[in-house]
Image (cartoon, rainbow, N blue to C red; front, side, top):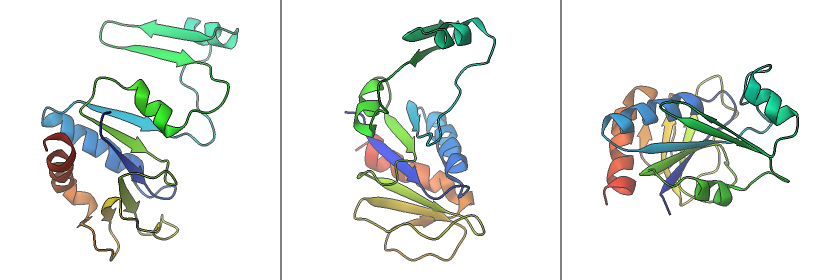
Length: 162
């Protein structure tokens, strides 16, 4: 299975910023990065009124949209898939960055931002690192938001090029 790391933290803590920057840094080093985003309140993947949106909203079980450089699959499910099932969907990556799923066991980077975090999530033996602009203790590497290049190097060394 492809290695994965969860980027966790409370709402507005900077998870999306950290995930996006790590994608940019790791792909810049030649790594193939995939992502999984947990959307607690649902999401809209298509544009209302477009053909593919109409197909799905008229009851299609799956809609595949294909273009010259990418394709997308929008699939109905009976119940929300768990992280283990979602990880199996991705087949062509060196690393999977998962935003969310903070209660799921597995390697984590915890994110905290002053004025935007409700506190620190409990550290577990699987916590790889913390990204924060707050004074934080935890016995794991701590990176500022401006030090994500060093975090990308740690991820590459530990998960991509062992």
